[in-house]
Image (tube, rainbow over all chains, first blue to last red; front, side, top):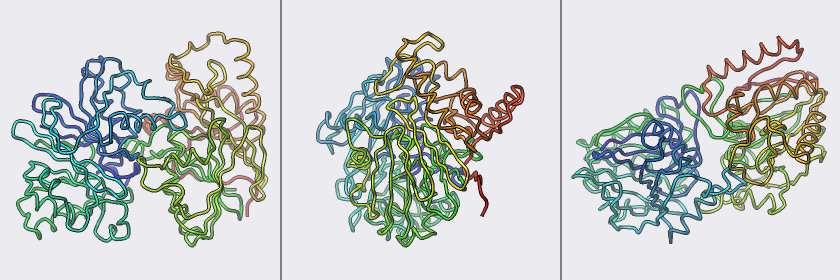
Length: 283
Length: 311
């Protein structure tokens, strides 16, 4: 599997010269499976750039297929949908999994984004491609794009965000963005979801100091990310969802501090990557 | 008065090296009459940094007042509001102006921007006092010593243009709008692009003509006209129903209204800095060829202009 980072920023896009290296687009990653299938996770502004890159492929001819996993519906995770070129091409087919009481409620949430007050698209029905919307049942194992996919909700401020585990042929990737654990860290179920993953992509929004003054927002510090990676005995931790006020040099410092935290907590053998827009990682 | 650009991009923010010079934040302009509180036009992602700068002033202690004129509520013009720091400080007073809608009160539209599950902080929990003011085209009102007028534009779900007169100077903000020639954009969703240059039914042509006439009248003699020039002529032909103009359309309005400076604005997300430079150069050449006497600039993040009486 090959992971590609299209947007690594949290909350709101952060353009400007001081975010050139890590990138200012909001959350979106893609996973190209060994069998050549495509899984997209989250639909922040990075999705627009993924979409443009897909136009020379089957998606440009209306013959594309992909799975979309949506962690939650905060704007920084859905803003890219209306700018995702393949979704306007009839024939393309997407299956979107997200968290809601029912599939129709999840569709209603996405429909609200297209409300004509906010969007010139007016309604999801004006997207040319087929988008099948499915409410994911936590803990249930789904077959999607030739992979096993499981999701579990994490606490995220006043709401929850799904973490996903994706497995293909003995390789595993976990996506856990937008999480603010209760004291004590991940729940037993979530820890089981993370356990032994080849790569754990984890919310790493803040330094512990900044997190203290913004506890109610439901995001992780590098300490939380490192502790989760060590507890779940993952092989590789990827830092993600940086605060919009952090410049590239701040993220460099965040990474150095995260490395030190891993080492301190007994995770010396865990590799560390700070996600940067445009970069790829083989799993 | 001073005019400062905090976001100049249309549709969606575009971070990256290709936009470092013009900037990747969406629409937001600060107008500051001499010795007065800021009048902010549009609340795209650019308003986040404006808010941070205001927190260094009396807004930081809850002693600030701001007026925010919203052209329309498409996401690229309001996305920054929940990230506008002065909203979160008790004591600040905010006045938000936008066009009245038939079906829903303005406050309900803004409340739905941040309702569950889209954003964690609901409008009702913001600590500043926030007042909503609904406008209809033609309304005139005062903000301190500044005079404000407005007229409607040709854009899906309808946008409003604003003129501000203060300190013996005037600026007009006209974004977003299609030219007034090929399609009437109101509340209906238009699926198929109309053919550019095809004749229109008389009633539609008349309505567009009167809309344009009101805009030209409002722009009359303005020192600065900030105009939606998202499209190249080729792009406009593909998407005349998206509600955006070309530099040619802006020039025509500026010429007829005898404005002093035209400002290209609401740059397309895909436009790189070098491409935007080329558009500015071509527009300048066009003005020179036509013998126009007004100036043209292309808005960039951080651009600040001083108009009218000096201190």
